[in-house]
Image (tube, rainbow, N blue to C red):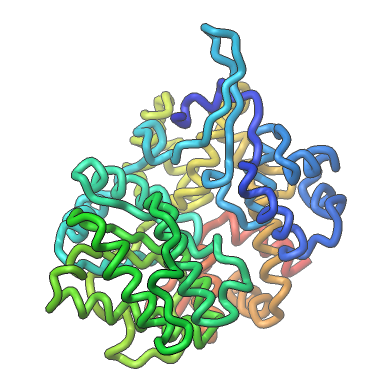
Length: 428
């Protein structure tokens, strides 16, 4: 269902198989009661309750709740809308925005470069960008093109692994193998290939891919691993899993079966874990870092959305949010769905709790407050008129959230929106 049809949508619900996950996210993100989440979002308790129980919720609230709970709303949404011809209510899964040129913004030559790299036998592609920079949309665009060529494609977000799955390497690799198989619609055959008594989980995982997942057909398998940084805090699992990916990439140089596997590792932070040079997937293959939108791309997007913008409007927007893809898309979403409001009016309140980014900003402020060292670092950055130097770990954490720009060994705040909002909080 293309994004432009959202205007027809009367409501959005959480997919049934995702309900338990979103319920668990409430406490994980610091809300002891549903009422606390409702108060944080300034919505009714009934709205939150409906969301958590798979009942219809207004699209705007659905997005805001997902953002607060760290959920990819595109991945868990089911849209309800009325067919004007049949007058019947239809429910269908949300199709990623990237499938419609109505919202996707090309950032040449990134799309074509990713596609060309993944045509190569045994390719390993690394994509790094802060959160909400469009990695998922890029993934959908590239995988769709490869699927048309006959490639099998598996987008796997590590966000969907439970905390328990990271408790041991054996559990994680089982989750990993089953998840890939499920996406390929292949039955779970772990019992046939997993030797708990005499083998190791890494060997079992390798055999499962080699003898089952890769062996089914000669068509290449593109495995896009998103949010890989979620494995980093689990040092033993991370070290062994990332080393396994590197080993598979090396296998492709000598064994044809492994040339069928094309790996994409997408992440938002540096891998601060002890990886030996010859066991790391982060120093081989090809690397791409996603940039922000340029003024020209913002103007093209405005035209696609039906707005006749000149450089005055583009510069107003760029001055506030600096071409950040998610923040830009939110502006156009509100302009399309609230045609009585102007860009200038939206920007006037953008840095406040009442503005369109209120929930987005509060979420980041809550996350930062959980780490006193990040509060101190951000305060230093916001107070500075020029670039400053902070501790590397703090810099990469703030950069992974998209809050700062990295300039060699120094940093700056990424845009005026964050400068004003966090300045008000930090120096109140």
